[in-house]
Length: 68
Image (cartoon, rainbow, N blue to C red; front, side, top):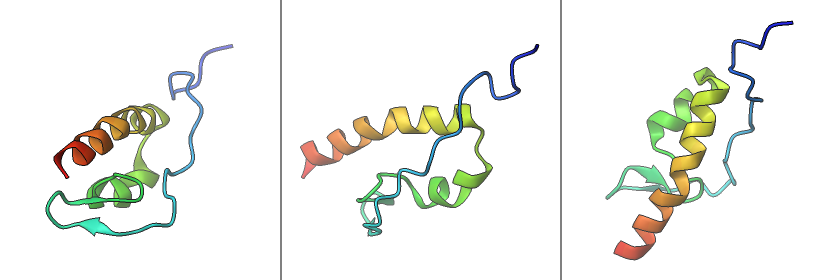
């Protein structure tokens, strides 16, 4: 049996937490920390792309918290 085309990664749910407010100075949502582009393209991302984006979100949040 061959591995799935997703590289063996399971699909993941959106990180949306229903706090949808775009920070105009940084162009990302302060609820889920994704950009508008990332939010709109989420359904097109492969599981690998979703996992990669999810891995970047904590750093984005931390960087924003330090600067405010």
